[in-house]
Length: 330
Ligand code: NDP
Image (cartoon, rainbow, N blue to C red; front, top):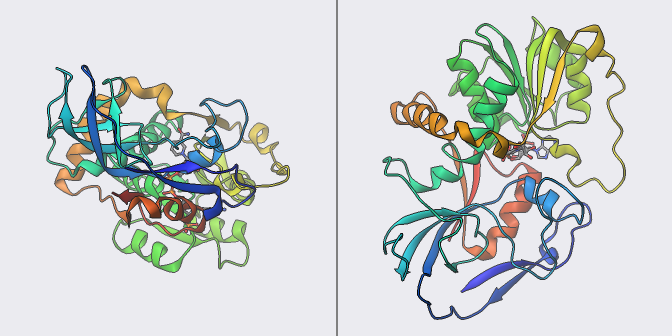
């Protein structure tokens, strides 16, 4: 079985040398154990944070050890009464082809008719992040103007669509004209800024949001946050989901110069970690499952094949290589 280990802690942008592919035989199953073959694994921006040796909401990865992350697999063999061969299971045992489990942390996927890998995307953690961040943290109201950064990624494209369903004016920023065109032409996003080609980020976002911004769904940080703070409306909400612009920073990052806008405009700015809101997951799956099935929400996937390409897929997140959810098919 092949697996990917953390060879060393990345400095700045991760490179292929930070990862090591290891091949080992699969051990014999003991009583109470299950053998799972992974079919899909997720790569996510938060994993970059786990590669740094620091105290956080989640344990850092260990150098030399196999990496971890969301994965969907199939039970190949079971000596545990709770699992049967053929069942599809969700786990945090990604970055490896096979693994043996005592059942802890293994969830059998419900039969929904949705493709199994959607539990790593629209029906999983990124979907729940979009839903919770926008509706609960962002306190979304019908008629709000919503601005979303990294708007064509796994979380961002769902934020855009949920905000449209809720009757909002939606604008976003992305890193390519193709991404912008898809959001406008297919998803019905009202205005999209390409942050890589624009001349003046603040002027472009202002033009995209002529009535100001009521809810900012923050995925990027840096210049985006500073520009948006100036454009927020009174009593606006900023749901701070991620700051991918600084995940590979090698020196301290400057804060926005205009945080006093929080006072003048009486803004609320709140960070959140989706796992703290997991009690809302069943209600989310029911609603998102319905939207996906009826086609109200579209969730794209960018797929890299083979575990040896997992590091490239992960690095690709920081290069904008994905539209929608970045996945590795094993
Ligand atoms: P995405 O699918 O959005 O992938 C990352 C995207 O970010 C890329 O495709 C790229 O698109 C864009 N990007 C990369 N680097 C930069 C940069 N320097 N400046 C601007 N855009 C950049 O990832 P996710 O949807 O999984 O995650 C989105 C955000 O949400 C991340 O910040 C992540 O950390 C956060 N998150 C937070 C959670 C929480 O609980 N708080 C849970 C899940 C995710 P482009 O071509 O447009 O540049």
